[in-house]
Every structure is written in structure tokens, then in C-alpha cells.
Image (cartoon, rainbow, N blue to C red; front, side, top):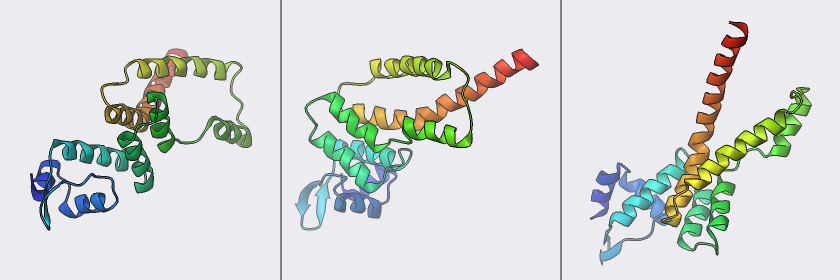
Amino acid sequence: MRISDLSARTGIPVATIKFYLREDLLHAGVRTAATQAQYDESHVARLRLIRALLGPGGLSVAAAHQVIQAIEEPPESLYELLGVAATAVAGPNLDDALRALDEAGFELPEGALDVYTEHMRQIAQFEIDNLPTDSSAAAVRYVVLGTVLVEPLILALRRLAEQEASARRFG
């Protein structure tokens, strides 16, 4: 398909596709003339990944480039590849979170970290058990979007559970 067809198929403007090509986020099409190229399903899939990384993933172009480079030239293990993806979307770390609690003078109830840790391990194990392994791109997409989109879902579920617990205790 031509770039205009690729644009129509993906809903991404031609100018944006050309930007992705210049930034080496999207691999080049097969040249058919000096100013024309043909694109295929691999371009459609890559554009979906790029949009996921830059859109909901919130990655910068540079971070998205690192993730895509790791997909194209995967590290030795899937573990290392997923590390690249996880690092790209990393938010505050545990030390930062604990420091913020301390600076605010907020004390967690006794045993709270142990309870949180155990539940997060269960969630993490479930996610890793369900991680697609058929392709590097699918695995990275799962990690990046799973981090960016599932974390707010987990927080929303926590708030709903707190409302239910509050209603049972105080309602």
C-alpha cells in the first residue's frame, strides 16, 4: 500500500508517518520510485505500537525509539527486553514513595507494606504468567500498555474497594 493508504488504514496523518520515518521509529517501505514506497502489514502493526508508546504510554520519542530498537535488536533474554520496556515507563520508585510519605508525616498502619507487597506480588505473577511470548513486540506492548493503562485501573479498583469497606464499617 502507498503511504496515503497506510494513513487511511491507521488514521495517522501522512505528515506524522513521515515524522516517524525520519525519527527511525517506523521502518522504511520498499522503494518503488524516487519519491514512493510500498508499505505492508508490518508498518500497520508498528504504527499501532508507536501510537501506543507515544499516546497512552506517554513515552517521549527518544524513549519510544529505545523500546523499538530493543524490539528490532532484542537483548539476549526476554527478561532484558522487558526491562527496557519497564524502564521506559518507570514512574516513581519505592524510595521516592516512602520518602514522600515520610516528608508528609504520614505513617502507614503496622504491616501495611507487607500486605501491599504480597498483593502486588500476586498481581505481578498473574501479569507475567499471561505475558505474550509469541513476539518481542507483543511482549513489549503488553508491558508498556499494561503498566500505563492497568495501573490506573488498579487504583480505581482500590478506591471502589475502599468505598465498599467504608460502607461496611461505617455505613
